[in-house]
Length: 144
Image (cartoon, rainbow, N blue to C red; front, side, top):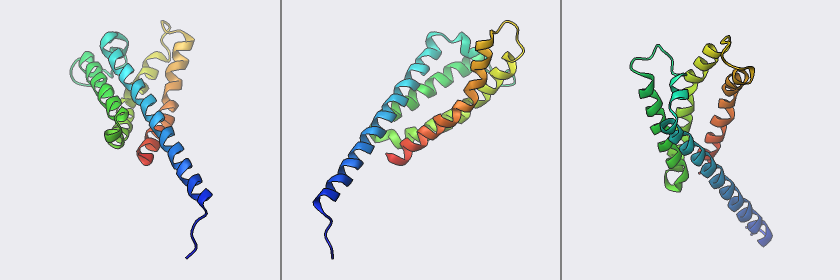
């Protein structure tokens, strides 16, 4: 049986280590961003309240706080290496779960004269941004 050349072993080890660092960095950035957004739900809840679909039972503030808790929790799971895989799957579920609120924001803001054009464009732009966020979380899951 032929033994691998030493430089091939080093290259493989180096690329694996680099991928792990990259994944760790990706998870830390995503987790930190989610924790920050979750805290923002408590510090400045009113903007989040306004995008909660009226069709949901209960008060908008309940959903604002619940999604804030979820974002903080998912972010913490992503930051900790031992819980990173479950955190990544939780992030995907979270992104899918808040998507109706993003759609509702577009629905409410699209023809609202009190919303500036950049605000309306921003609301629309959020919808396709869910795809790279989900893709990022999936990469974290696969590489953890």
